[in-house]
Amino acid sequence: MLDLLRRIWLRKSAAIGLIVVLLIVLVALLAPLIAPEDPNRQDLMGRLQSPNWEHWLGTDSFGRDQLSRLIFGARISLMVGVVAVALAAFLGGAIGLLGGYYGGGIDNVLMRLIDVLMAFPTLLLAIVFLAMLGERLGGLSNIMVAVGVASTPHFARLVRGQVLSIKEQDFVEAARALGGSAGRLMVRHILVNSLSPVIVFATLRVATVILTEASLSFLGLGVPPPTPTWGGMVAEGTRFLQRAPWLSLIPGVAIMVTVLAFNLFGDGLRDALDPKLRGVGDVSAREY
Amino acid sequence: MWKYVLRRFLITVPTIFGVITLAFLMIRLAPGDPAELLLGDYVGISAEVLEDLRRKIGVDRPWYVQYLFYLRDFLTGDLGTSFRTGRPVLQEIVSQFPFTLMLAVAGVVFAVVMGVPTGVLAAMRRNSWLDYISTTLAMVWVSSPSFWFGILLIYVFAFLLGWFPVFGAGKGGNWGSLALHLVLPAIAVGARSAALITRISRSAMLDILSLDYIRTARAKGVVERLVVYKHALRNALIPIITVIGLDMAYLLSGTVIIETVFSRPGLGKYVIDGVYARDYSTVQGGIVVFAIFVLLVNLLVDLSYAVIDPRIRYA
Image 1 (spheres, rainbow over the protein chains, first blue to last red):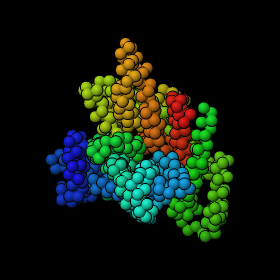
Image 2: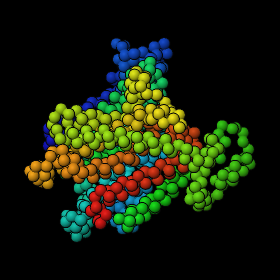
Image 3: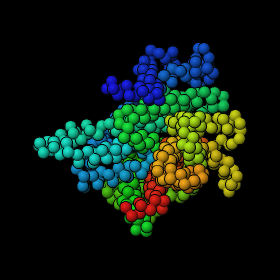
Image 4: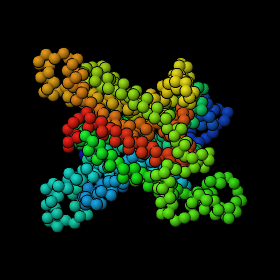
């Protein structure tokens, strides 16, 4: 672990990525302590203020402090990013593991299903899942499930590919000869050995999922107001783009910096874990 | 070659069938009674009227019967009727689709025109300031949300400089107006792809420029320009086209949101408006056409490999 951290540290861009990610996590965790105001406190007399000493990033159309909303918005982005990716890794991992290990009919059926899901752009798929869920889980959970399920096919493909190459190796054969059950072989031997690319892909995927969540919030399909979300803040700001451009532009910068940090950290992690994994990231970067 | 084309096409057919089925299931599993949704905000509707309406739109039958009717309608080009407008969904999609196609093609053109030369130049001048600036900008661009970038473009080029119109797609039939309305959305849609293509072009060119046959070409005195464009770039094109192809699905996904940012008509905006209004037949028809479009683009990309790299045809 220490060796891994040292190798990440040696790459300047990866180290910067890691530091920024940790900072954003810290900001999200400490939001109630460091935010100057309650993010939902309205002050209609002081609406649309430009950045000043009292409100460093100005106020929105309800007079709410933009900096406080930005700080609290980090919570939604990170939470959706991490939980949705964990869900996608779990579901996709299970599908990839079963398909890759058993092969034949099971694999065929699962992979055709994955093909079908991959025909839909991820954002569109997430929107349709959101429509399907309706009011069932409620706000934040809906988004996490919809984005998570929409990201599942990518993990399934990745894990299946890993399983196909690892299951042919001698140590798996040896474990089977010693009488290991299918479940034990899959989890203890194959899955554990295919984790590196999955971890790298998951890190990079957090970046993609944060963009998807921001897009959904921008479209008004994300966590409902008044909860502050970065995508929602960009959308609200567009109505005052000429008068108060910072309302839209600053939350966008926050999204960009967070996504960039995860991308840099993911790239560095990939190189540090195994230089042979080059290319894993390029897959993740291609859509959201 | 034709055998390859046919085989590749036949693989796509079951996936299209799967897409149509999945769209049916997704919409049927959505909450709410379609008949009640159709009536919208009318209150105090009697049970008989609701029952009658359910029979009329066919949702009173078991799901598998509904599915068979849905398949039959789909194959005959009937995608249902929009609850909102009362017009056939297919007719509406046909009128919206050209706008999305135009935006996607313009986005790809922008991405390729920006990405390939920048990547090639960065590779040829490795570790120069041009290389550093282009790779850094590409990383930043890959990480920025397209809707935000679209808003930034609107603010700078429409509000501050007044060079381009802000909203809509321009007047039909007036090519100048259509083109002028297309510039900013196309840049917003294509920016991320341009960044990706820059990165891939750079690394593909670097890989190839270090190969022996390039050294041979240089050693026998071939002009550098020819080495780069004829020997290297041509072979670097395969990974570049792969990325462009894979990226098309993302780019189409981008049109969904950019159409909303610029209030442009198009398939993406049509589906989003359908979601807002809970007009499920619109959403169903829209996503199926979207997915089929993505599958056809993937098919075209695969076929283009076969043209560029003859080894694939015989594999």
